[in-house]
Structure formats: structure tokens, C-alpha cells
Amino acid sequence: MTAPRAPAAPIASPFQRLAALVRDVAPGRPPIDLTVGEPRHAVPDFVAPILAAGIADFGRYPPIKGTPAFREAVAAWAERRYALSTPLDRDNGIIPLNGSREGLFSAAIQAMRMREPDGTRPAVLLPNPFYAVYAAAADAAGAEAILLSAGPETGFLPDVASLDPALLGRTLALYYASPANPQGAVAAAETWSGLVDLARRHGFWLFADECYSEIWRGTPPPGVLQAADRTGRYDRVIAFNSLSKRSNLAGLRCGFAAGDPAFIEPWATFRNVAAPQVPIPVQAVAVAAYGDETHVVANRRLYDQKFAAAAARLAPLFGDVMPPGGFFLWLDVARFGGGEAVARRLWAEAGVKVLPGGYLSADGPDGANPGAAYIRIAMVDAPERTDEALARLVEMLS
Ligand SMILES: Cc1ncc(COP(=O)(O)O)c(C=O)c1O
Image 1 (cartoon, rainbow, N blue to C red):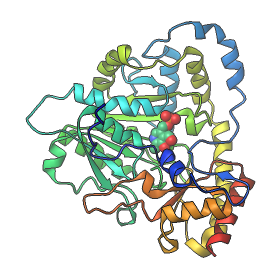
Image 2 (image 1 turned 135 degrees about the horizontal axis):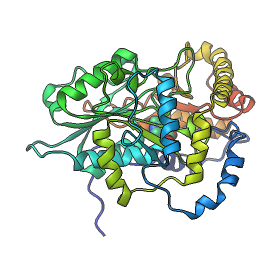
Image 3 (image 1 turned 45 degrees about the vertical axis):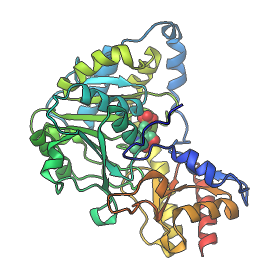
């Protein structure tokens, strides 16, 4: 069998790489796993009754474009959340996804399907570190993946505006995450506006990954739809979001894409033969979830509590660690030996499993991996267990 051709950006699950790193190591203390970005807060109470009431609908194939109630609930939520004055197109500007990941993947393929060949090699721009599906999407679409470093020099977000216009000219799509995973950086409203302008000027698709939009400290992160709304139209802009983080429903697999109907309508036609639909009872859960903020506020409080405890515990070793958004700590452990070494030791000596930052990023054009110095800690467990894990980290490194 022939091996797949080498992709421009490595395509490997960070969790598989971590499993290999610690395969021969037994946990030094009762294990606490803070690797996966899977909220372990309670599933909202309204979910089970809605699924039970809709049980017969599991016998039906769902419409690929979603139920009208789903599209209305998502549109109304986004319009409220971002104070949009330009209504989202309920028919062609919103589509349900089986979690935002599969949508982020299939969007690059759709972008390629819509591209007019012009003799250049299309590029897909990704932040570095990046959520692995962006690289997989660029690869599957047959585009060149271009990694944009997102370290402390650029506020942990990629600097797209200063890219060579020739590169922007052949750019098919930009994946841009805010709040960013793993760094928790949040794009300002002006940053989004600048990206919307660039996307329109150079004719690329702006894929805004906003699945952490509701997990924030201080003020709610601005969104791409808000920036597009200021121009009175959603051209070139697709926002991706989901219930996974907002509503602790990572296993329900329900998300959405919203924005430019000129993209979403033909994408829906393609998805109608190529993509998984979202079960009707799951869409009914989404209707309830997007109509309720109480559980989201309670959820944020729990993260606030954990981040406040973490800030106090980690300050002597790491200074200010509080990210404005998301639920990860992104700790620079270069002086303790770097991400891989610390992750291995932490498992061996303290029984705490975290991800080496370098597994979420790749070597950039300068040969340096911008995540190599870091570990990522998912603050997803109960407050006491999370704090216990951080106490063990501090003890080990002190
Ligand atoms: C940055 C980012 N985008 C998208 C996703 C996908 O989430 P889901 O498919 O559950 O909506 C994740 C999941 O961890 C993520 O971290």
C-alpha cells in the first residue's frame, strides 16, 4: 500500500502523540486527565426530556438544511448575542453541523469547489498553533496550508494584515479562531473588521471558528458576524459555533455555520449528498439551548471560579496566566525543559496528564515550533480536581 503524500502541515491527533509519549510511564499519583477540551460540567436539565419527547423523530432522516425552528433559534441567538441589525438569512444563511468540526472540514472542500482556477496554487491560511482539522481540511481540499505564527509577539493571534499581497491573492480561505485554542486570545472588533475587509478585497473565505465564544472572562468576545454586520452584509464570512463548549454538549454533536448565503446555499446542496445530517431531536435540543442563557451563565461562573483559583496558585511561578477567553491554560514551561519534557514528568511524578503545546502546532517557515515551549491545560474538570492538579504541577516545578 502506498503511504498518503506528505501534507504541508502535519496531520496527527495530539492525543495519539501524547499516548505515545507516555506509553512507558505509569502515573506517579492517582491520575487526573486535563488534556481533552471536553467540558465535564453537567449536561443541562432540559436535554433529556426533549430527547425523550422527540424519540420517534430518530426514525426519520433529518433535513440537511435543518428544521425551520433550528435555523430561527440560531439566527435569533446570533442576532441577540452580537446585536446584529442585518438579519441573518433564515433560508440560506444558516446550516446545522454535526459539531463544528465536520463543518470546518467540509467548508474548505466547498471553497475549492467554488474556486475559479487562475493558474495559481490556492492557499489555506491557518494559525499556528492550530486546531488539527484546519490542516486536514487544507490537505483534503488540495490547497497549500500556510501556517501563521500566533505567539506572544502578535498577541497570540496571527498577523494576517501584514502578509504578502501575492499570498493573500491566492488565498482560498483563512481559518481564524477567537477565542483561540489553545492560547485563549480574543480578537478585537477592529481585528475582525480588518479581516472581513481583507477577505473581500482578496476574494477569500473567512472561516471564523468561534466555538469558545461563550466561555470568557470580563467582556464577551466580539464576533465576525458583528464586524460584517457593520457593513450591512455577510459576504465572504462564515461563523462556526456549537453547543459543545457553550452548553457542555460535546457528545451531542450539534453546531452551526452562519453567514454568507452565496456560500451556504451551494454548500447545502453539496452536503445533501456528502455530509452527515443532524438528528431532528438534537436540533430540538439546540432550539432550547440557544433560547436559554441561564445554564451558560452558570457554566461561565464555574470557569471563573477555576481560573481565579488557578491565577492565585500559578502567579508565583508564571505571573499572569489568565486568558480572556476559552477554557485552557497555555503555560510557557521553557525554563523547566519545554512542553514535552514537562508533560512527561508531570504524568510520571504527579499523575497529571496535559498536552505538550508542540503537539498542537508545527514548525513554521523559520523551522521553529511556536508551541514547543508550552503545555496546554484544559480547565474542564470539577473545581477541586482542577485545583488539585495545579497544586501538583506547582509542587513539582517549585
Ligand atoms: C478550536 C476548536 N474548534 C472547533 C472545535 C470542534 O468542536 P465541535 O466539533 O465539538 O463543535 C474544537 C473542539 O475542541 C476546538 O477546540
